[in-house]
Figure 1 (cartoon, rainbow, N blue to C red):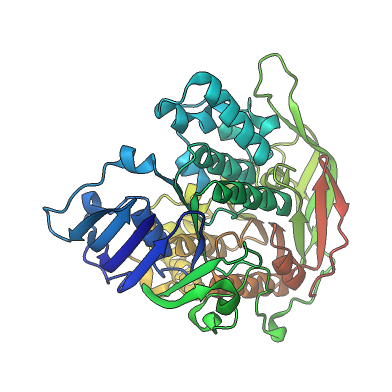
Figure 2: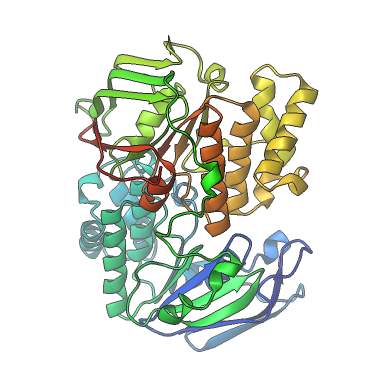
Length: 497
């Protein structure tokens, strides 16, 4: 149905990727393309989606075949151009970063899901049934009238997947589709993919880790440094030693040096929430505000790592955003080291609370990695030379010391996430608020994050992290709390501490 033969691919005269990579996917087949950061899996996904990058200076040498029609590329200016409209009618694509895939022309989730099929001329009555069916499969029916720009990260992820599924493509390519999803949502997506496969859709899923569970007969193409290192059944991939290429298995705990374990709470309160209520304005005219947090009490001490758990849309991100003033409580109080934050500007709180967004691309804006990471220390009052020193040291700690002069958006997803984390480290706040910090990380980066988080707590800092990664929470957190119905309750989740 779809196949690719890649001799090589290069971005802007960079090192070649996808050297000697061949992949053929048949109707109804499920293929996992696994690889650590910079392995080439996202590039392969884009090529399958018809994005050769020729208009941006990339050079592809090879061939792509869809439904028996082969298009060949030799890297010359005379190479053919793939018609994106015709290609997307047959090949659906969900890229990394759900926010960047919104049409920005839809006022509701229902309109967003309908956008693609409507542009393909699907009749109105059929379109309504299609949207209803897909929304039901992904548990989005209660959100159909909501503004997609007001969704949680996991809800937004399901929406863009639903929009791709609604086009009923012959091939569906998804780059890390389970990123940021709670267990129930991930199961909904997996079941919906099985329904599509039953109707003949070929499914290609790109992941940084081998999946813990996948359909029977799932095949794996593993990449490392742009080259294939394994091609076979998932059952065989698990015993193929792929961890030596940075490819772990989802659900495995990060590898921690026992000496790096934090010692636990030191007694001093760094974060205190008392009776916090918060509601968002309703998406629907005439309706009351939508309650999100109700009477939340939470205390986090120096030296402590607290995992904040809960379903998509439960308010985890909203709670974290109260720590740095992005959200302001309707009632109750928020204090940092015993001082109420009241109406201090968010920028002024950055020296006390370092915030890692779920979509870290929202917080990157400078021209070079070094400028990006040194911005926080400057804003916190450090002299420019001291800020640059702190930035350089932070970049070394996250393994990006050699990339100081690179533009952040020339980096891969994992590296951009580490740049954002380095910005927090360089600024030096006592409290780290991390929103889904392991989402999309490969095995080495996940292990590095665990070491950095535990080191910060050992040094007397506090960490509050919202996560669906239970194995990570067990390994690093001292305790876990769950958000349900806008309230926090302790969670019976034994941790590794």
